[in-house]
Image 1 (cartoon, one colour):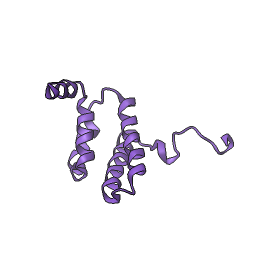
Image 2 (cartoon, helix red, strand yellow):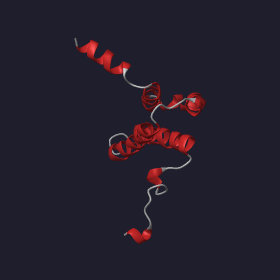
Image 3 (cartoon, helix red, strand yellow):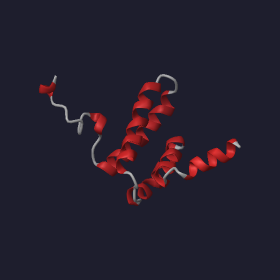
Length: 102
């Protein structure tokens, strides 16, 4: 019963999200998958971009637990964000905040 639920839920996950989770778990696969990410049609650009941001934030929050693992995950997310969106929201660019806002 539990396996059927997992199988049904995984069928609803987009190809790009499955590929992202694969490369987050195995960062050394990123070089081989860069062209795949660059040329793939992303069904929901906004959701994918926020998935990359969530990986970065999660990595920062857990960095103290396993620095190498979380540095690699963050590197993957940042690299994909630069490749696909040519900017990084968490780097201060694209946030829409100016010094005068504070």
